[in-house]
Length: 360
Image 1 (cartoon, rainbow, N blue to C red):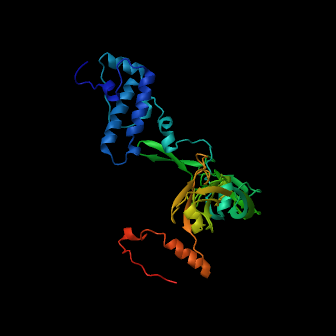
Image 2: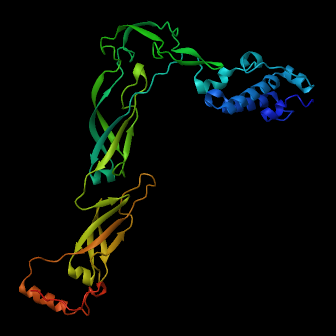
Image 3: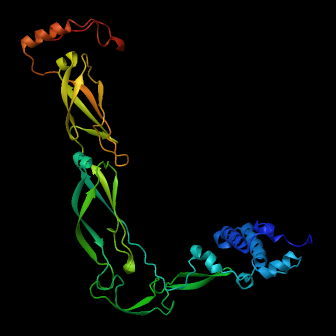
């Protein structure tokens, strides 16, 4: 093959014995990558697209390919009219990028999503609950199907297709018809029920099913409960953000629960079995002798059920020594006796002297 002849196989990156189907697939892939409309202002991509199109014009045609393989040469006068020479359907190639379909296929936009807040107790979040609520949204008019028209005629601008063609560079591109906004119809008289809006406002009651384990900030989505789409298009979704009310006993962190448990001095010093509140009842916990105030214990599997793993978190119990406020003289003497049993100042490690003032 003469050195002056371009190596079209190399340009497309295929072997010389590649099948016509392989050549076509390779060209489609490269054309998608380097097409000028996908690379605006990129001269290098435009030149590359010219090269691969020129190569495919020859190799994509079995007769021209055979002549080329025998050493034939071809003359190309610029980057133009590729469809007529290559026999390749660019509309098929770029239809998914540029929407070049000209059929009467309709596309009505989805309605707007709606957002609301819902407050739950910690117990409701733990068990899950169905909560009744009311929402205000637009709905598709049942009289006109959302078109807003009692009568209409075919749009003359797009001939009812809903799309018009414009030229972009070397190709004809389709776009939504600006006259009818893609419906293919022009309203001649408005629907009396909705006043031509197509989407009247409605107030409706719904039951919202909240799954067990939701946390503060969780979002429950109800599909199709947002505003209706224009022209009868699909409705948007309703997003419900969960807020948890503060609990008088429990604090939640993820799937774990934290509680502060008051115990008597005797229970802490001597050890005891104590009842601990949990989110779904109560549980028994054993305090070892010498339990300290602020000491933390874990009750495994007594927290929230994870919506993802279905495993229960834990409950952490922080001990608080409850000191009586009203103390009798007899009780004071008993406490003083206990006080004398301390061998060292409990604040010694904090750098405080052993000396201390007596009160009472």
